[in-house]
Amino acid sequence: MSITGIIVGAIMLVTNPADGMKKIYHGVQVLSQIEQKSANKEWKASAHEESYQIVKDTIKNIKN
Picture: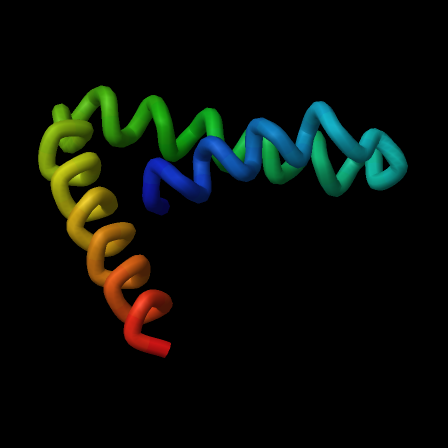
């Protein structure tokens, strides 16, 4: 999972409490993935990859 996905997942947990169990389950998944990235020390590589993808998407949007 990307860093953006983690951030969006955390925001979704806070903003719309209507889907209680679904949000809690998603939150548990996000936390598990955070722990996994921390244990494998993949944050630096993941951040680099995510920033590259954001720049790439921004350039595509500018061209269109």
